[in-house]
Length: 525
Image (cartoon, rainbow, N blue to C red; front, side, top):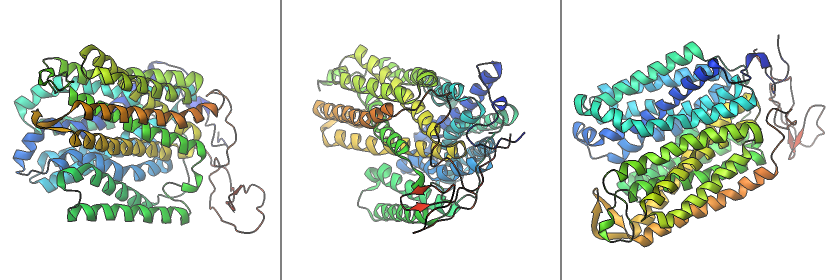
């Protein structure tokens, strides 16, 4: 039977409650997300071996290449998932990551290796595709809990990975990292193919490849400048050219998106709730990511240096680095469960509040190990809650046939906030470095630099709370209730613009420009 409304796919095709089948789906989708962590993070465990093998000093490019590639891939993968199906694109994404790991494994030089890392960067898209898929194969309340699990469950890898991979690396060398990534990607692709159903809602139209190239390329270039400029020189010719190319590409994309009939991201359809959500996420992500970075820094500084802070000694470092990952799992899971009952806006605000309290408490925690562990865990809880709630909130606002696109936009915003504010925090520490004192080969900051860093992160949390409060005040009814009609819900089949004339029936007015409503999008259930 064919449904004639895009908002409500056939409930019989979706999971209504937790069952053995849903637990299996959660495990498979979490496995797909684990790949993103392994593909992007594991090679950093063998960075010295890679530099020696390829006889290069380009640490920055080897470190950031996959994340930057993920920013380039995201717009194309997000839009494609809405049109061709989330499950199909997720499988393709996993296979691309598998191919990239094999290219890295066999790469004879650093340039071929970077090609492999570019392909591996597609794994970045697995996270938002699994979110959009979960939203469409489950009813809203169950889907929100599932999103919390799949977005945070992969952080368990952050706890176990060093203990599991290091012995393997010691025996088989740096190539074992890419063998593990390839096997994991292949297993995830086969599992998704065997156990996960296809999304029951499809969008219409075509993929705006030109717009996706401009947006992805512009984002990748700007993020590359921010990530690599400190190591390669902010004012070097290559870095200036990279920044100029990125800004030009983004400007070209905005011009193209405002004129194209079916842009990869329709700027004209971004509603106020979506914009408030993205603003809260970019500020909150910058704050919790910069605090997680600071935890890694102060964990390496011995208290005996007499700087007024420092926690590094013995097993304390391992505990400090593992605690936030445990917190992410707890925070994401709880936020998903709460979102299914009260909506995702409240858990988002709660996560921001927890992060703010933990951050300001870290002003004392930088020199007290038990307090630092507690604060690190709570920052992880905030990170998990903010990520899960951000995905749930943004995809819940959008019509089902555009949920893949908006989930991809959330991923890009989270990455953007992380990169920008991590860089800002690193510059604060660098500006306050103590001459001649190093920990693990890196310069050590004064206590003033650390306190300014913590205060900056805390202020970011407070700023993120402003749009989050506005979202709570305007939050819709219960998740399982009927959705209120929205002006942007209809996706026209062949949109037309009008100027200076009265719109006909079904043509809503939007700031002097309307589009024909066309027939409603049909589900393929």
